[in-house]
Image (cartoon, rainbow, N blue to C red):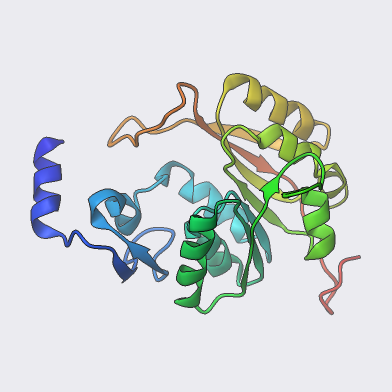
Amino acid sequence: MAFISILKDTLLPSSADFRRFPFGIGSGIVMSLDFTHQTRLFLGLYEIEIAGHCKRLLRQSRSAFDIGANAGYYSLILAKHTGGQVVAVEPVDENISKMQANFARNPYPITAVQALVGAKSEGDTVSLDQLSADYFRPDFIKMDIEGGEVDALQGGLRLLEEHRPHLVIEVHGEQLEAGCREILTRFDYRITRVAPRTWLPETRVDAYNGWIICEGSPRPRSPSGAEP
């Protein structure tokens, strides 16, 4: 690993710049990237464990929410693979600025929303049901909100019942995963757990970490684009 780090530092530029990704699920997207800590993104190795699941479910989807969008990496992937609208939700000022700069370098219809996502809409917090009312009902939801997963699902019960979008949720604790499963099984989701890889592992803060792939059945739209 030390040799790889030395080789990377020697061969790759160290300053941040906008770069087009050549590999992986994000191939073709353009983002500001710094090789000192984002080489896996560029090489298509970042969270490669879930890439196949995302591509398969995105082929069945025409719109998406990115909940916990950070700098917009997954937002761009969702837009690329659905060919439709994406809402990217992120509470942090600096990340909002970064994602807007990244979105401006790509041709996709992505709306940035600065908010937390929780069980109900109040103050700086918005629920999934409220986002769906304000924008559209997504066919796919990616969620990575560092422990807020259960609250976010509680705020989207109507969406889950009536539309049943696919979800890919990063879970940050065994109890949190159990809470997500309890909610989603009410609506007959098929749930698969994906563990972090052991080869070239990424640094993760939580002792218990992984993803749940939640297969729903998004309700079809009419030819005019309106939902039934």
